[in-house]
Each structure stands twice: as C-alpha cells, then as structure tokens.
Image 1 (tube, one colour):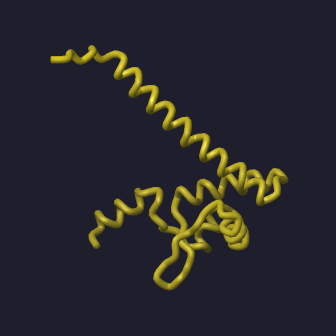
Image 2 (cartoon, rainbow, N blue to C red):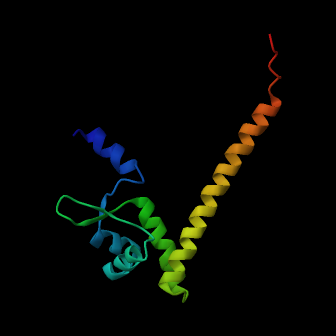
Image 3 (cartoon, rainbow, N blue to C red):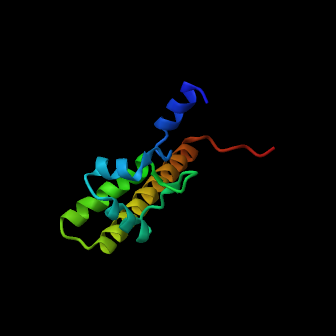
Length: 115
C-alpha cells in the first residue's frame, strides 16, 4: 500500500478509519452510546481483522446527529428513528433533484426525428 492509497482511503467518507474509542472521543460520548445506536441499527460498524468495531466519517456524522437529539431529551430509539428518516428524506430529495435536472435537460433537447 502506498501513501497515495492511504490518503485516498482517508478521503473516503465510508472508509472505516476510526476505532470505537477514537470515535467516542471525537463525538464526546461514551463507547456505550455507540454500542446502543448500533443495537438500534442506526449504524453498523465494520469489524477489523481482530473483531474490533471501526467507524467511518459518515457513520460519525450520523452518530453525532443522534447524540444531538438524545442530548435534547429524545429517547435513543426515537432519536435513531428520526435520524434514519432524515437520512432517507435527504436521499429522496437528492434523487428527485437529479430526476428534475434530467427531465429539464430532456425537455430542452430538440426532439429526435424518425427516419
């Protein structure tokens, strides 16, 4: 593995670069919180060869949003469901915008002539 390969992986938001301890430290939470949101199926960390949980930057962002809700008094199960729904809505909006863009592009194109 070259230094370039390592940098490419670290730039990948889905690369599981963070151990459970480091992830908890970055989020300012406990490892138990990370286990709890894993049990609630909000995030599923990958496992290292040794069986240790590894988290990506994307998963840390999701966990941080859940922590915000829990800190505001939302039960953890409800917070996880809210975050899942927010994520699904964001994805649906992204797809909708892309379809609208493609539709506008198709409408602006001259019609094909039949031969």
